[in-house]
Length: 145
Image 1: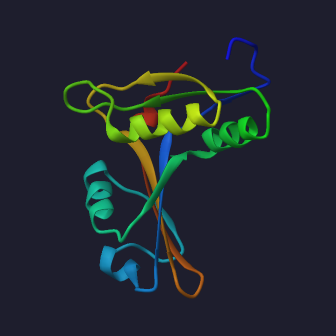
Image 2: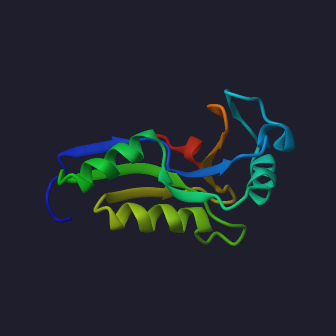
């Protein structure tokens, strides 16, 4: 950006994943209805491959704030931590997060956690105002001063 940021957000670098279904995916996925839970990285991966056409976007509360502020013309920066694959390279969620945040104009200050995936938050919307939320913060939790 080259200039000072007006907003600096610090928090969880996550990929938000949303799936919408007419089917009772809560039962199929064995997730509690209308609750948010944390799951292991292995369980999160199992859930992802079971979803019908999920939409993915850079997310996490403070990252979303920085992204939206930047899109509204406020010079914004984000500080967080993404993960890597077993070889130490950026994983696909890290790539997606970085690409979308940069496209929104956010200046990024990201650490990379070795052998830990980039975190994610899955939201499944079902009929009747029912939902399931499963989060796996993973590498985001390694952020430290």
